[in-house]
Image 1: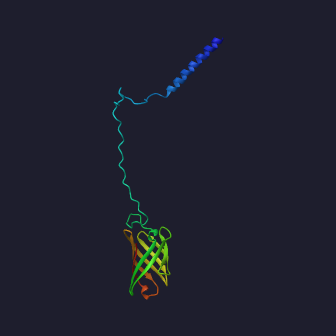
Image 2: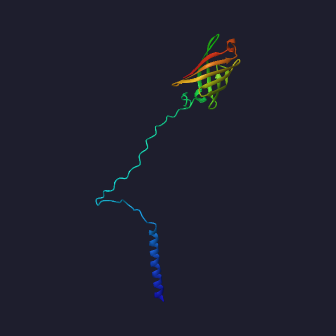
Image 3: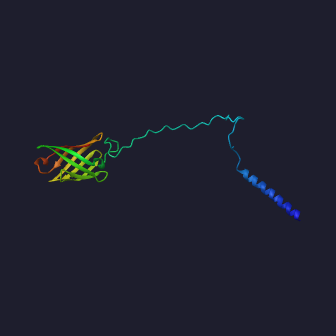
Amino acid sequence: MNRRILFIACTGALLAAGVVTALAQAGSTGGAIGKQNKSAVGADDAAPRAQPPARPARPARPRAEPGADAQPGAMGPNAASLDGHWTVNVSCADGTAVWSFDIQGDSDSHFTGVYDGGGKITGGEISGNSVTILTQYYGQRAWYGTLSRSGKSMKIQGTVTGGGVSTAWTGNCKFVATKG
């Protein structure tokens, strides 16, 4: 009886080993591991694999700093690019004057500031190259101009209307404001 049990146990173990071997080979139905077509001296007799063509590098696009260019299609100037001291030359019917603006950007397109020792820029807006400046000092004035840039210098050129100390301010005056 012991021989019979031993025989059955051995047969079962051999069968189990055969099944495990068969299961291990079930997934290996093709392919090869390692280099193929190798010569006895280790050289590779197979033709080299074709590499996919390299994509040409895309040229880098320069990043414009905010307000760097006032060119159509480029990222335009913003209120922060107007920050700072501006010299303003005004030409009216009764003569000329030189003033100054100190502008501080409040948002991307709006700014405020002061001018000539007591006047206030109560509202300023930039849209593309168009600049509007509203001031208050012995009356309200509205300044409408176009921004241009040359290197680090900026210029706003346009007209100013409104009231003030001089009767000449009741009509249109021209101005040129420069910075830098």
